[in-house]
Length: 122
Image 1 (cartoon, one colour):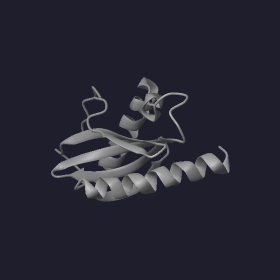
Image 2 (image 1 turned 120 degrees about the horizontal axis):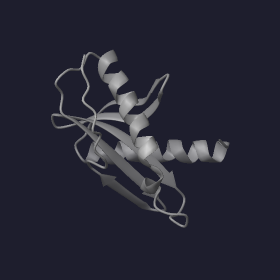
Image 3 (image 1 turned 60 degrees about the horizontal axis):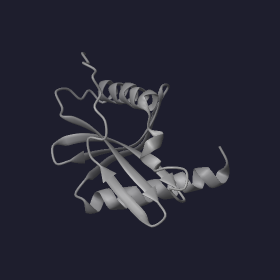
Image 4 (image 1 turned 60 degrees about the vertical axis):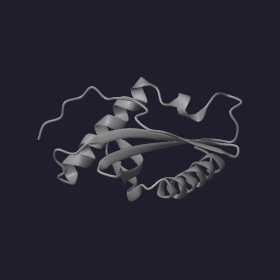
């Protein structure tokens, strides 16, 4: 990945964190990584634990940023979220997968962006 894309992604994440805080989210962790992948932001929205994927583009010329989160990416995020929950020993917690879409001078929060049909057990 080029430095320009990495910098654009970081800028989008920084913008997203500020935006989420203004929306009342409490940021728990940024860039959580495990062997399976990464979750951009882990946050609490009231009593719901949110795994937030940030997608940033300069423009929407090639489609909206959130369109890049296909079924494969959703499954990957769900697997990483399960590792996070097990690692942090979080049980019986309401969860949600949100997406923040950033492009041009626009930012959009999509709550419950996708649903994961996975029963996890400890």
